[in-house]
Each structure stands twice: as structure tokens, then as C-alpha cells.
Image (cartoon, rainbow, N blue to C red):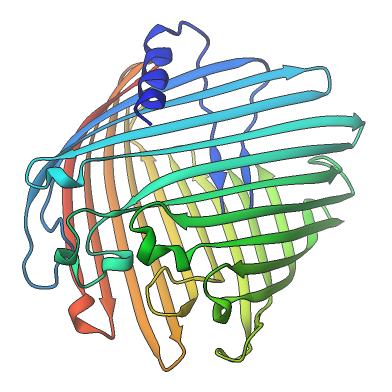
Length: 400
């Protein structure tokens, strides 16, 4: 892990290649990159210093600490005749004044290869791996931060292969992918190994142009979960959605899909459950200086708790950006997650509310500075699990 961090930082320091902004998005089954023509090598190093007022996410005994973060990032793109390869590597090192035992590294690698074999047809291969630190007072130690001397480390990874028919302006478009993913904690194996799972999955999307820039859209998804140590959580999940997609420009587009999702458990420990499901995404650029983005949806997922349970969650994510001028930008983002954590015996409600306010100044084309304020509120029907957290920080970002 240290080698990856140093490698990304070294390439970022040495590179004189053309730099461009490429965006990535990742969910549990797939990852996507935006596209800029040509071969690219882009690096970024972020340094951030700040203070957290409730590091252990305690209900009634908040403890402050200062922190330092160093986060290099590398993006590589090679484009050939009919092929495209993209790779993004991220690493972060965190150190804390008052809680040195929680110093840690995070990392992730996302890669994607496209091969076009006909004018409107291509296949793609996507791989992803990430190690993330689970802070004390969250996840397995929710409500009991002092039960651990340091947090846990968890790993997510997936691999998929897919087929894409059509392009942005096609009358009809279709995308299909199949893949495999798994999850496991890398620490305290004697306790956490029964939480490890793997799944095989299929996902299909079909769009048909009905008028102007509006598409009728459908989406189906199937995932089969397998647990080596806990057969009660083994299940099959189904998702079926239909709706519309509308696109005016790259910065003004909308997607609204409605339908149902269902979880069928192999054993009888949990009841079969189906419910209304939705996925909404919107980008809106009403004025040159203002950008809005909104996403919302529902999902059935693992609860990441020691007690046998499954989470039925709804999420809402709203972001606003305002450019004061070419150099000064203001951003605010609000995230809400409402979860029903269903155990064999009962159900627990958990609500997560998070805000991030940030102002960034582009000093040079390769150097920017920012100030940031975060709030994080967690409410549960188990009162001792509740916590409030605030963090303030400043930092610089260097791009090459």
C-alpha cells in the first residue's frame, strides 16, 4: 500500500504530460469514466489539514483531534484504432494527532477497456478493487467505539464484461453486462469472516428514442449472493425499472425510472420482500455560473453489522455549484440515507444526514486552494448509536 501511494505521488511529481479533467463514477457492479479524445496522463495530489470535533462518533463524549490527509491520484488513458483503455488509481494517507492508532491508508483502482468491433457495437471489461478504513464508532463498532483499539479495513472488488450497442444519438441503445464481486473484512478475521460474501450478477439496459431527445428506458438486474459462513443471508435479488431519459446537453439531462425490487432468501430466516423502487438522476445548468445535480434511489444491500441483518435503504443526493468568476467556485452537497435494517427478530431505523460546504480558488492552472466544512448526523432507534460530527479543513490541490 505504501508503495502504491509513493508511486502515484512520484508519477504526479515527475509528469509533464497533458492534463485534463476526467470524471469517474462507481457503484457496486460497474464503473464508468467520462471521455476526452486522445492519450492522457493526468495526476493530482491533494493535501488537507483540519479538525474533527467527535472523532469516535460518540453519543455523549465527543473528542477532538487534528488530522492531515495526503491523497495522490493518477489517471491514464490510451486510445487506439477501435480500442480504449482507462485506469484511475487513488491512494490516501490519514494521520491523527490524538488517535495515532487510527492512522491508515485507503486505496482504489478502477480500470476499463473498450473494444469496438463494428460501427455501433463494442465490448468492454471493467475491474475495480478498493480497501477502505471503517472508523471506530461506525459499521461493526457503531455505538461502541471504545470496544476497538483501531478501526477495521474492508475490501470491495468486482470484475465484469459487457456489450454495448448504439451510440449517443442512436434510435435504439442497449447495454448488457455480467460479472462477479466480493466483499470481506481484512481485519479481525475470527469475528468478521462470516460477513464475507460474493455474488454473480447480470444487468441490462435498453433505450428507445420516442421523440426529440427523449428515450423510453428499461433496466433489469439480477444478483445471486453467497455467504461461506452464514447461509441465512444467502439470497437472490431482482430489480425491474422503466421510465424516460432526456438529454439536452452534457450538463442538462434527466433520468426517471420506476419499478420494483425483490429479495428472495434461500432459507426461511428472513421473509421474502418486494417493494417499490426508483432511480432518479438529474443534471441542470440553468445559468452559465450555476450547476445542479440530483440523484435518488432505493436499494437492498448488506447492513455490515455483526447481527444477521439486511438493509432496505433510500438515498437522496443534491449538489449545487456556483462560479463567482473564473477562479472562485462555491459548492454545497447534501446527502440523506434512510435505512430499515431488518434482523431476524426486529427492525431498526437509521437515518444519515451529511453536508459538505466548500469554497475553492484556482490560483494557477495547476494549483488550487480550498476551505471546507462538513457535518455528519446519524440517528437511530437505538439512541446510544446516535452521533453528531463536524469537521473543518483547508487544503491545496496540485495537478499535472
